[in-house]
Image (cartoon, rainbow, N blue to C red; front, side):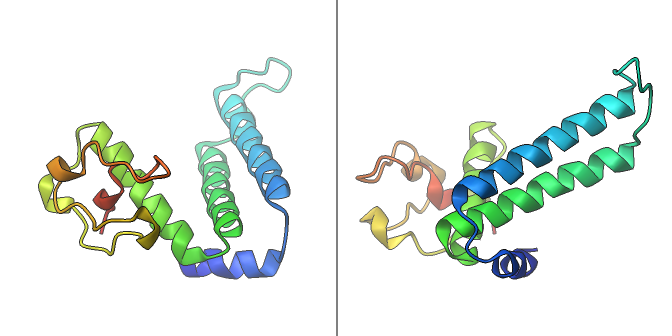
Length: 140
């Protein structure tokens, strides 16, 4: 997926972050529109969209968000790493991450310390920027 995101990022060139975020907002609106059409919630249109339409629009949201992330970071690898760390954080917060999934990936140098080696060690860790809590828990 991320190789393709990199190609899309290169294809779109130096599109400003604001435009990328507006495009993401547009895609979210299209997903909502597909849901409304699938459920027949617009009395004027009735049921006019399918489950596949909704899944296609949700896919566009994910793709557009990934391209926006790569544009903001300027690097597909950094965008991927950030998403993996965030997914691990959200998964851990839901109580679904086990000790076995703690990543051995290098801790970001700008965090100023080594990566935690366990969930227990990672809990409560904050970088000087105050935004690296639990980031060592990236999925493999």
